[in-house]
Length: 458
Image (cartoon, rainbow, N blue to C red):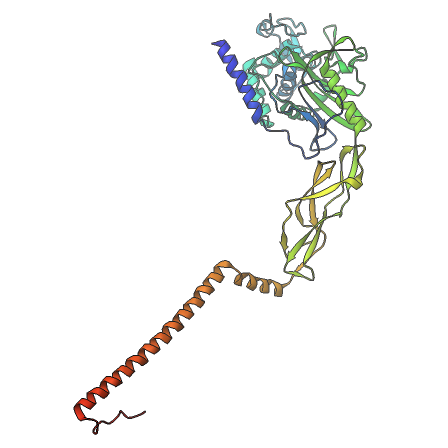
């Protein structure tokens, strides 16, 4: 029965992956010209308030989150604890429920007191599962109630393809998410100064033990993984989830967030390598070296022309770009090769048209890729001509198919009436002539030819 249930859940996860809601962004998504081993990833531009996606793959494919789960655990705790200096008691269940699971722990002792701040650091820096359990019990009274809070919070962020059954990230087939949802969650978490501070800590000392951050990109001693521009956040790995990392990087004023999920271990240069860190580094280096902010079109650049109905002194108006468009584009971009393509422009506009009125959208295209979408506005004002409006209304009225049909019917009716009237006149004339003939014959019979007097003429 358990195997059957596991099979059913697995099939459900695969099926749901085809109906995920995508992470929306209007800027262009590029294809990195570097090796990325992960099955699912996203690179997000943090310098734009809309957080556009720069690169992605399988971002809506369901994945197991492993210890990325602890981002949610930390945020639910932060959102529901007023004083991080408050202390929690380490319960027997919080510790013993992890026995035999292989979970990473900080070695918390049953019955000891520990601050919420310590628990948060241990969960985020060392990825300690025992710290997560203690946090959950302190915040919600039980781990199960805390998990309900986790699911409610991610749902409130619009994560439709994420579900949790534990707070520590240990593998469970009912615990899943997507790179897209994890991006939403992390972007929300980065709004918390406390979360940023804790998740960026390279190490943390508790009870005489120095714990280093599990993101090995932060540590120079790990030569294979170290990346000097990387900044904290969280890692995760299980056999089923592969190797995952969510981390930031900043260089020369540019800032990115990388979400890497389900990356393998590969032998690179003869060394077994956790490719999640390599993938994040490659994504950052590609973005820093290949992309830059550039003004691709200027304000008032003419993009299209539309006819104007009933315009006074003008029968067309030009559509121009509303504002300068500066966005993240390939460093090799040549503005002269940029194309402005109106999206569903109207065939015509009705006067009056006011300068600056938004008429439609336009895609800014470079190398067959839409890099941004902008507003097109009227370049000038076109006033209404009342005479033309009345004239065109009459023209429109008399060219209306229903009106034409009605007029044709009226004309046919008039013609039919004339024909009928002429026919009646002929019939009446013939009838009168017949009556006169009959009267003449009667008079001849009664009076003879000599006594016949024709009717008096009028």
